[in-house]
Image 1 (cartoon, one colour):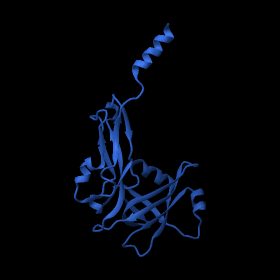
Image 2 (image 1 turned 90 degrees about the horizontal axis):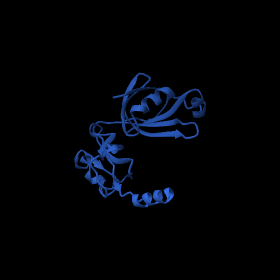
Image 3 (image 1 turned 90 degrees about the vertical axis):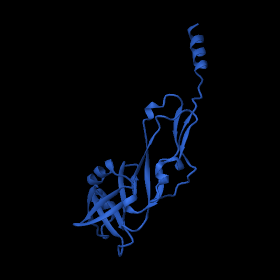
Length: 195
């Protein structure tokens, strides 16, 4: 599990000023915390973390030497500057189910030769105890044929009794559509240009 170092942030200093100084601001909240903890984290540390972790990932957050097992709850990007402005964490409690998301990752899409691969869902909403949380769901699409699709209810995770899937079970994640530009028309066009 990744560990991220953070410092408690004084609310006297504006977030904008901290961002100019190379920090990302954030908050840690949770049922067992008396109140949320405002934090600041070095931008380089956040960028490194987000290469391997994302929304829905569990990490250890070290705030001034005190460790918290947290879930990355929300990441706010600044599209103009192409950087993270704000990141929020939920402190986890081992016996409390939490809402989270699992990112969908399609694998072996290069094997789809006939048809067009269309992905409709990027993530699945779920609720689970910290020990059962997943942050990524890999779906092998290499065997899919034209007209076939995978729905939420088709995923192995949907059968896991420790995880409550909150996304509609009938929602289509990925499908293979027929290619609509007919090759015969292309060949005829080529022949007419050759003539």
